[in-house]
Length: 251
Image (cartoon, rainbow, N blue to C red):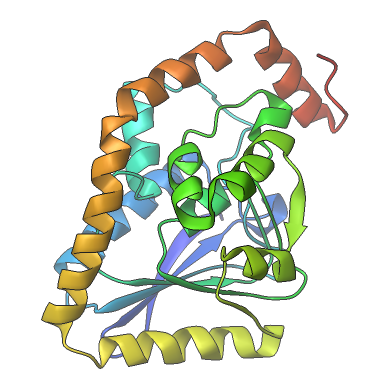
């Protein structure tokens, strides 16, 4: 069964695990809805720091599962936005433990986290344009802020994948760690954050995430417009068919 799991590995620390290993931890619509619900739950409870990772060893997450319904009206857009914290001024710090490939919406979720480590074999990329999909989870807005224009545009426009060392060089992750050290680092970092003043930590996080969210909100209407335009273009059917048939698209 594919799920989003929540556990409590330590006092004031929550652990979210994206669990769909057969599909590289791609998230179905019910999983996206559950992830959004968990963000709400954790913001209200006594958690002081949240760790996010993927199940298995192959992937952290490759984003949304595109094998099903691909409609993306305003209601769906709001669900994706909340699941990926695209426009949320979220006040709880989030630690990312990238245990494998982090692609598409996986990167967009990563952009909502605050400190990050990855295993050496992890690959990162935004492959949406290859398949005629608009990166609706915030990458077109947030990635430039986090790693700079030229590096962001290289990833957004080429659909290339980079390795973990390159990701660390660009500032997309803080460090690269052996697999056996990844979760220890994540939980130790979360415990360190949780041991600080929660009022001060959450004030800092809210200011930073609020600034990012405010900017994203000003672009939200255009995001919907651009996503709709790509989805109704002649390229879209070919891109999705090529993805599902595991072949190169022919535009």
